[in-house]
Every structure is written in structure tokens, then in C-alpha cells.
Length: 603
Image 1 (cartoon, rainbow, N blue to C red):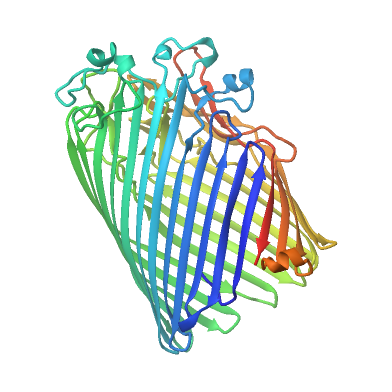
Image 2 (cartoon, rainbow, N blue to C red; image 1 turned 90 degrees about the vertical axis):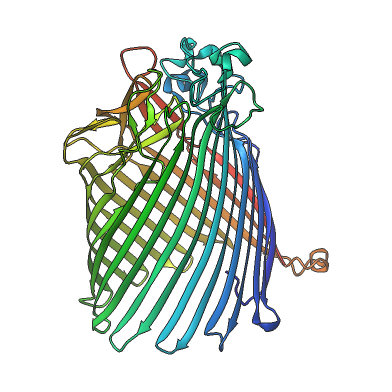
């Protein structure tokens, strides 16, 4: 949001892999009528640290605020827009990375996925000071997202992939069974010579519209502060995928759609929260209660994945209580305890089940009688904080108990993850954080956390099975960071490192086109990444050339990520592929060493 002081700057950045970023921001300060305005526009592009992943993005933001009532009340408005387009990294076998290098990606004539994304949002907020004890706030917002992905896979590598695939799949590859059906009139063989040639290109679309209102009252009483309000959200989306034999393709319902769904959701909640001062400056209790209702509908048209259309409507309502107790036994030390219950509702469009199909090769068929269940979480936490003479230390322990734990399995055939429930699980651990400032210009910091996450019951379903005691995937056991900062001769320097420990990744297999997780997992190693940053500001008022064009300052900076050039994977998964008796490790690599410089000119 804008502030009362004027400032403006333009900036440009350039780094490795052809990375560039440029833009400006302007804060007007107080204008007539005390209106304050802030504008920002940026553009960025990169060739990508992974081969064949060029991208370009544009971002715009505007906000203004109009105070009134002696600056105690205000009306604020904000608008943001983001437009982006580019090629995304593909999932591939680790053996390909070993053979062709850390930055490997499929060549575009073999496989690619190109994304186009546009989203914008707007918010209108009203803060009204009623009297010294009562304030009312209301926020109305709207969001629109438009996403399209065009993917291609060479039909020649459908069922006999070249040796370098090492048991993996080409992502989003064509199928050899598409033909006219009662729900799809498109005939790929007649138009392009074969089913494989006629399904080499896929268009996936996802459109989202969201509108909501969030009112809140704040009431200050002698020994407590009461907050109560609500959040009322309406959401609609359309997602679909179409197959064709050329880049330019029609997108016809009941013609060439693999699926075509329309979903809605109404999410309404009301809450009350009270902060009670039992002993001023020593002890307070903060109980809260939230009541939420969610109604979801999903409508599916017939398609290659849906032999028949269908619809489903689910309604959820639940209470979510919580309480925090905080106590300061002595100066500089605070301890607290917290407990709460939350509920996670499955996303619209995740109701899939493995049932019969006209083609045995694929069974990702919608079943209106089956629905993913909500996930229930109970949280427990104890913590303490210490702050004195530049030294800060915090510690907390926690436990989270899950019922109907959300899980997912990645399907490389269609390039998406399917969500499902996997019964009960527990996560627990502790976290330590510390910081020490030697003086205002120099300090060090460090942190460490440990977590165990395991399923606590056996489960077998259409999309996988888990065993009690099995580790939940993608949760590192250990996380640590350490670093320091200093101001030397007018320059600011910072160096820090982050360690991500070992974690378990799932093992999946497929039968008749349906991928499912096995009740086994693999542990993959951790990695450490070291980063650095340096900046220096210069006053240009004494240079006549810059003074004439009203440039007052310039700030130069350099950043280096992954200084040691460690090789690691952002994502991993073991899959029993098209060949071999052992599962293949599929990966998406993390960023190698990356350096860029920035110049920012202030007016």
C-alpha cells in the first residue's frame, strides 16, 4: 500500500542463463485530498537454467488509499495483473540427467509443454473508525485466472521409447486407442493417419473466477479485545483437455475433449476471537471459534476419460475451535501453548476413481458416487521466546494429528497428480531459531528443525496403499540454516546457507493406465545450498549530470545463489515404467549456481 513519503525508482537486473528483469515503482506521497498512490510495473525473462525453458513475464500493480475522519478511517483500492508465457521443465528419468547433464530437458522436437497464464485481481477495502473502542473493516475482492498449457510428445516414442528414456515415459504422450465413441466424434486415424499421430498435441485449460467479501469488527473492552466477522467466497472454474494432431486445434465439447468439467464452490465462514488480558503484560488467553460451510458442485461432460457425464454435489459444515495461552514469567521471556482444530476440504475436481472403461488402457474415469473426504487436523504446540540485548532465541515443539490425510499420486501419462485420502497420520517435531546482533551493523543467525511424519493406520484404495509406520513423502527430517550480515565501508554484505535433509519419496506403478502409490518408499539424500548478497548505495546529488535529471541515488547489488554449485533435485518420484523390474527415479533438477546484478536509480 502507498505511504506518505514520495519516492520513485527504476531498476534493471541481469544474470546468468539470459535472465533479465526491469521495471519501476512510484509512490506519490500525499496528494490533494490526502490521497496516496503507488504504482509498480516489472518485466522479466530468462532462458532457464534447464534446457529449453525460455519464459517471459509481465507484472503490474496499482494501489491507492484515501484517509478521512482525521486519518483514523480510510478507503483503499488495489489492482494487480500478471501475464506470463514460457516452456516448463519436464519430468524425466534420473538416468537421462546422468547421461546428458544436470540441465537436461527433452528437445522440443521430442517433447515440450508451453504455458500461457494471465491473472488479475482487485480489492476494495473500507476501514471505518466508529469510536475509540469500535472499528469496522470490510474487504471486497475479485480474482480471475486463465491458464493454458499446450504439450507435445513425439508419437514415435509411445510404446518403444529409445534407450535413453531408461524405463521412463515421455510426459503427456499420445495414445494408441483414441477413436470415435458415443461421447467423442473426432477420428484421429481418419484425419492424421493413426491414433498416435492424431493425439500428439494436448491442450489443457483451467479458468478460475473468484469473488468474496470479508467483514470484521474490532471491539476494545477494558480487559480484552474482541474480533468477529466472516468470509464469504464464491468460486467457479472450468478445466478441460483436448487432443489433436496439430498445434492449431479445435476445442470441441464431445468432439476431441479428454475431459471437460465445470465446478462451483461456495465457502462461507463466521468467526469470533477474543484476546483476554488476565494479568496485564504477563498473561493472556486468546480463544477463537470458526464455523464454516462449503458447498461444492462438479459437472463433467463425456470425454475420452469419461464414458458418461456426471455431476456431484457435496456439502460440508464444521466448527474449528482454537486457543492460545501466553505467559511472561520474567522480563524478556515469553512462553505459550496452543491448540486448535482445522479442516481441509478437497479441491473441486478431485473426485476420480478407477472403474471400467470402454478402453482398458485408461481408467481415470469420473464416478459421481465417489468423493474425496475432508481432512481433519488437530494441532498442539508449546513454545518459548527470549529477547535481550540484541540476542533472540525461540523454541517450539508441535504435533499434528490427521484424519483422512490428503495424498496424491503423479501420473506421467497425463502429466497431473490425482488426489486421494489415505486415512490417519501424525507429524511432530521441534524448531529452534536464534539471532545475535553484535551491533546495529553486524549480526549472525541460525536455525534448526526436526520433523517426523508417518502414517498411523493401514489403507488400501484405488490410487494407492499405505502401511502404518510408513513415512509421509516429501517432508525432510532435518532443516537448518546459518548465516551472517555486516555493513562494511558503506556496503551491506550477507551470506547464508540452508540445508535440506533426507526425505522419503513415493513409489508408484500403473495398471491399465491408472497410477497408484505402493506401500513402500525410498529415502533420498539431503543437500546444502550457500548463497551470498552484497549491495552499496551512492548519493548522486553532487554530480551535476544526475542532478539535472533528478536522479538522487543509485544502489548496486550482486546476488549469487548456490555458490558451491550443488546439484540437487527439487522433486523426485520412483515409478515402475515401461521397462525394467526396478522402479526408475524421475526428477526435476534444482537451480545450479546463479549470479545476477542489479542497478536501482532513485528519484
